[in-house]
Image (cartoon, rainbow, N blue to C red; front, side, top):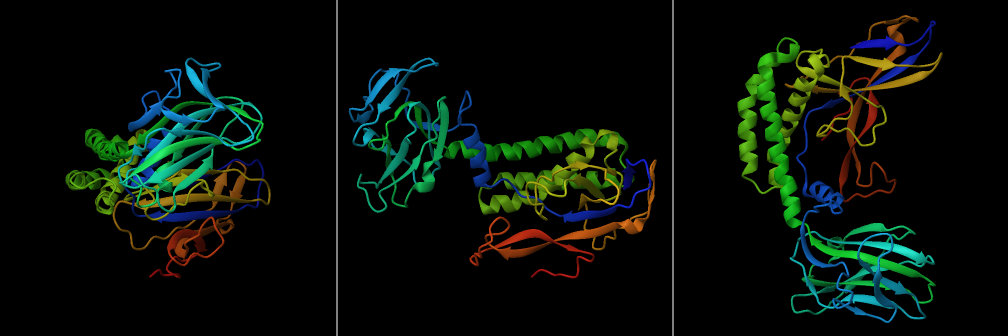
Length: 403
């Protein structure tokens, strides 16, 4: 690694290099795939199967049981109709007229748009639960506050998170509380079954890794100026990775078995793709391992099984600091083959502004260890589970061993 100094005078800088050795990757989980699908629900062609919808284009509330405060009007500023509700001294309810069947275990979302005309009273979304016989039990309903502003506001609720186990049908229920002095608009109500869309996102993950593997195979003959040994190491792994993707593709996506089968090939393909995509292989200056330059305080934790490493492949780190300032830098090392003993050393740092002795560089390993389940964001203990957290800065990472 090289250091580039951007100083014009001799400085005294102490630098901390944080190094995490990354050894694995995670396949996309069902939860992550669901998050992707939820973000697409307001696209021009939204995913999922719509099991109930009303854009109020009929000009009536025929799909609802509505109190007197509800009516259908022309939607301001956009084409089409919407429902309007005016508060009174009682609840103003709009409830879907029929039970909406929901398959057990399927992720179900309710989407709609709202707008405040006057007042600031909250418009509530409530979902009532029914069993296979159309009867309700305990708990019988859950509600939440819809987001509403003076402009049309999109709302998406993953209501299946609210369902008790007995749920086989639901009703969708909007209401204003009494005496809220509010007039609000409601439009484009949809109830969407996301199960098939989640499966499709998970299937696309395998396809994306296949495309990356094919790109690696095409790019490998040229070598892109790879350091000695890289081309041979990559070529030796291609048949095994192709076979591993075939085996993972036979397993139901999103299951623990699928995640376990895809973990290692996903990691290898992602890293090898990074190697061959590095412009002129200038980001690969080592034999057998990669170095990523990243921020010392990343938005998410970097763990041994982190799938996507933040930062870029690098052969140099640019550090800018004022006289006497401590300035951190962070590197992530990933090895193509197991490397049981790695020693990081610093040499004197030389630049147009002078020379800094290697004694000014303090190198630490970032050691991951387990903490109570609320880590890393909470402070309360949750002893029901443990979380791996990159926290300890060690001169020797063998000082602390994990069970």
